[in-house]
Image (cartoon, rainbow, N blue to C red; front, side, top):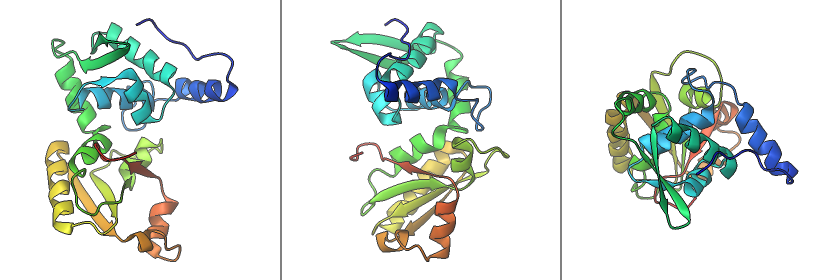
Amino acid sequence: MGAVECPAGNSRIVRVCSRYMRASAPSLLPILRSRLQGEVLVRVLLGRVPITVADLARDLGAPLPTVAREVNRLGDGGIFVLERQGRANLVTANEGNPAVGPLRQLLMVTFGPRQVVSEEFVGVSGLEELYLFGSWAARLLGESGPVPGDIDVLVVGPADRDEVYDAADRAARRLRREVNSTVVSRRRWADPGDPFITEVRRRPWVKVHPKGSPS
């Protein structure tokens, strides 16, 4: 697969694509070129199954040409393996590269929480919506500051609390940091007068789509 640039013609796509390509180094891991690069790495290196370039772009909500460009670069650098499967390109980690293992660990403690929380909370009964908030969400969205010491998860819906806490424990073991989970009803999440909800919404927060659930 050759390198792909931003497409010409559609002005909206060009604007979105250009925004991703101009993105500054992410606060969570400044050695990376952009937040998108970090998210591409996380999805492939921490994901439990291979993924096509098209599905990767859809999962990340990013322009396909921009994601393809990142995948090409990481493939050329020996981090990814690209395999043609019909009309699609399947992307996997290059386990033969000795740099992949240490890079995976570094990503796990920086960009990893959204991927890990997504996977661990997928089976929770009654879960309707899932969010990350607090310091980690702020760093993901570019706010500067110290590396977060824990991860804050908000579960919306009549979720089974024991299952929520078990999922948080599993995520914490994988991430090697505390995962704090809070369960609220949909009615409370929609209440503009609730002090806690007002504070969550005032600060950066990130919606998570549990793997295997509808987007």
